[in-house]
Image 1 (tube, rainbow over the protein chains, first blue to last red):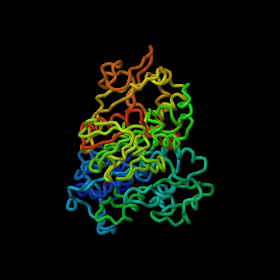
Image 2: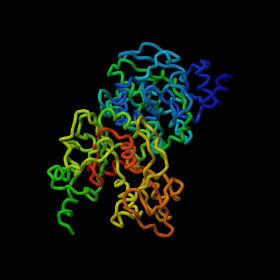
Image 3: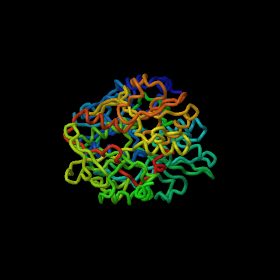
Image 4: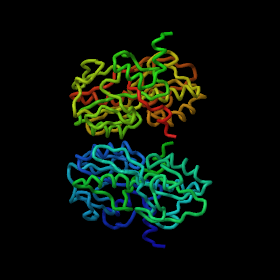
Length: 267
Length: 267
């Protein structure tokens, strides 16, 4: 076992963010600070902020807002007091006019007083709850990224932003489907209950073996494909509009909050 | 029994809105379109809209957003397609620099292309669920307005908006408290679970017999006062900031939506 990885997995969110800020840790955050919520990051100029906030308000399943910061503010006081969103994620992606331009470890040089930061919940939070309840999570068992598909389910348009839902799929044994629905219903702050159960063609997915993002996973005989709204949805809706400037986390390189997954449960 | 009131209570939301638009009905909306959600209305110039939306996002219990409309739009396409928020409520209040200036039945003369409309959930929705489950709702039994109190529980500040929570109080028999919590937990879109149970002094209320708004109600021996976040909270936070111009519904004269209360339940 890798000693360094073993050590870092025992650190608190604050200690890990400190290692990230110093540049000591620049890898993916999966498996770190177990029990604590990790978040997707989107940073936009103020002129897009109202429309994007409205898009998230109208589409809470793909866009579960954990915290929205006032313009120019980079400390997420609710999710991690003392943290700095400009330096406390391992990697960021910079987009200009909807196109990826570069990946960086520190966005301080790009920061401006009109930037508004959005932290969105991530399915890591409910996957731990599923596993705790004995519901298998196939892509974790197989050491892969979750399979993601662009569905035909329309999002509600908001201002300049629109698109269809991107969904994740987890194959669930038939006797565990009800439990999987119940458990994820508790986590409305992190995508919540499934959006579809069963036949992929009903939501415009042609081949479960060919995901649009992530990796394909094994589906055992009798298992039911269950679909949840995915945090890639707002990124696709955003980029479609080709905004002048956007910063996001780099895939898998999330922001680690001080909030326990269980504290995000609705009840 | 008043025949006209009896007749109107059987009409659909759309039919009632049509009578309101024609000026045939200009009274309070309590008891109309039973089973359908009624909504609070706040209309603000665009320059306040992001901060107010952020205030609602950070304080979902007092500010449960049902729909936010793009600027200049007056048709709530989600809650009531075809309706017009400028004419379909029985009475409106106009505020200038935080002060009430007049009450009107039609806000068309005040409409402007930069106005943003917010529809917020109202406790009528969960009160029906409580009564259906045999949990008494005292102010309805007594034919009064719900007692409301300005608590010392702070709201989360957002931009220019801040304040403390206004709460409603319902006295609940001790053997019904758990059920009352469970039922209202289902209705997170309309204030959700209670914010406090029991001793009023813990949240800064000196005398339950003297509410800050609404009427006082009888508390029977052994009954537990249970407190829920109240939709007056955002109005108080708003007015404190003395915005140039705000329109709200007149108290009790709500917007009647096409959405069933049960469709607002989380699960």
